[in-house]
Image (cartoon, rainbow, N blue to C red; front, side, top):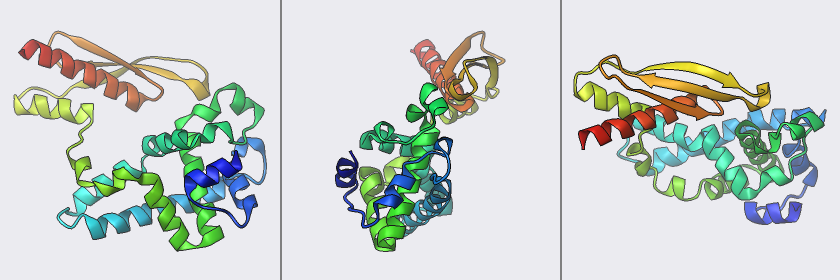
Amino acid sequence: MIDRLQRRLGYQFSNLDLLTRALTHRSAGTGNNERLEFLGDAILGFETADYLFNNAQQADEGQLSRMRAHLVKRETLAEIARRLELGDILHLGQGELRSGGQNRDSILADAVEAIIAAVYLDGGMDAARSLVRNLLGERLQNPGSILQQKDAKTRLQEFLQARGMPLPNYQVVNVTGDQHKQQFLVSCQVDTIEWLAEGRGSSRRKAEQQAAAAFIEHLEGRKA
């Protein structure tokens, strides 16, 4: 499995202990990836910013910040981790394994950052730069497309503002599940519209996005 991961990363470690540490969550005890995660986060942010600065020449500071935030956010890194099948080879404590930690976005994203740091320590900045660009792939090749991507909450807010309507209110209706596997139920309502949308997600933010998307769908259907 380690060999397969290295092939997918496009990098062969001289010191495999670094890769083992990068794949070890703090729940598994000492020798975990927390410090690597700290370093990897900084390397990822810098390399992404450097690439965008040199390749998105028409973007202003705010646009560059938006593009970088999208590229390095937890959901993006977790998606990369799943593509690499990291969940199958992470070293987790029994509690995390029982609660499905190998599938949790935060743990997967942290592992990706830790791997970036491990590659840097093993092979230097050029190797880490190549890895970052390999992992981000097409996302990095066409950064301008990110500027056209708006999340559901932003689209709903712009829809309402363009019509002089009040902004939506989001309320947490219910939270279920264990602490490490919570599910949020959130409502979305606009004062001048007699309709309420609901959304579910593993975080409040995700649930709010689901609720906003449902509200947009309702508005577009009503408009049609």
